[in-house]
Image 1 (tube, rainbow, N blue to C red):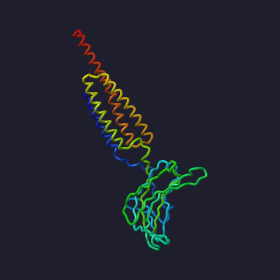
Image 2: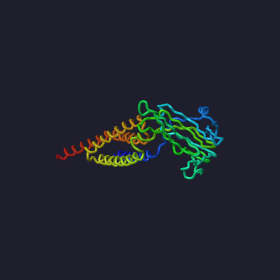
Image 3: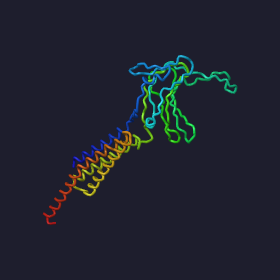
Image 4: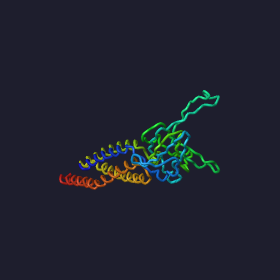
Length: 310
């Protein structure tokens, strides 16, 4: 029975470790990567160059007029259903802004320069189907602005894909680049990231809390079961508790498999599978020996009673 006690302690440590590991943030799944080699022909004023080990898209606006380019268009409905955000790294040089001159007599000061505008923008434009038959398509957009000069930085804020107010997915997604004036922009390949929120059974933080508390309780009860079984006491309680743990382990395994099949993240299915596997294996293997232990003690007790004539 000391073996069961040690295994129960191992179960506790493993459950706590699983809970702590599940709280570590996991990077969203990369659905696909768009390189620029096949797209550059569709993007004016651009070229693909090699820079820092990447094939990079270089876009240069050499005059002071506004430049608007469509970098990427996605109409694949199955892909749009999965995508949660666009991610890329950007580098820019000498991106100049423009200023606005007030010419309205009712303005603050007629003729006064009160700009500047945002210099450069990456826009994520989404086109949604009509809300009703015969209606017009609707559009929504998110953008990230930049100006001046910068080395490689991740695009901030990350351009996320949203559903409209009715929960409908967009028909088309476009990634556009706008330059108000002169400037040079470099873009590494665009990555489409999977959806990371809103459909998970629970958060990594909740998984850590439940896993830590549940692992501690199971470990303590397992140790108590091993101690009682070793002394041959509380037979009904011990055997009932073991069968309950086995049932919980099987249910946890089933839930873990369902979580994997339904696409739940690591923080959901891992805390289900690990304790489920350990509970089912440990207590199933030890149940026969514990029953034999109680049977042997009962036979000894009856034999002792017969020998003493009681």
